[in-house]
Image 1 (tube, one colour):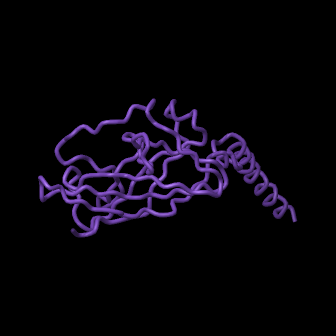
Image 2 (cartoon, helix red, strand yellow):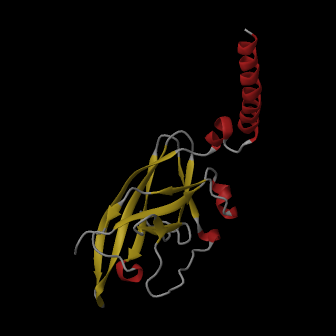
Image 3 (spheres, rainbow, N blue to C red):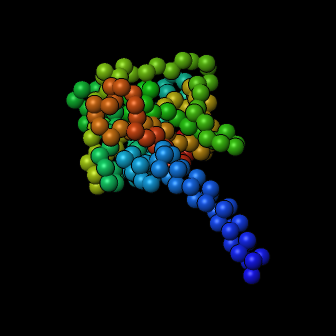
Length: 188
């Protein structure tokens, strides 16, 4: 009987530090116990290639236009828009959205084939598109196949940031980074 008691005591002494450590982590770790719920939940509804336009001056190049629809599920989302004034369409801002390609092992940001340094739309030109909970909005993303060395039928994604408050865009502290489903540029 004493041997059984020692085992029970030993089990309790091993369990106590584990439970205390777990309680500490749950109380102090970032994102624990629903703290991450303050981040907006979103779903990419679709990513669809809407046009592939050959470059009349360069038969090796095409401009690809991708429509990306974002749905805000339970919290407001804000996506920056850099379309020209009066445009009926929203366009992602340079510096906020980027083309992503599969490298054989992982997804990586696509780099320009020519060593070109990509520009960024000034943040003070970013106009907020506010997506209310339960609604969706679409934005367009444009890229050159030759500039990025994109092969036909190569799997691609677009990565971009969203905010929960339009005033936070100016401070470049995105609430979340999202990525579209995989899409491919169709053959010409």
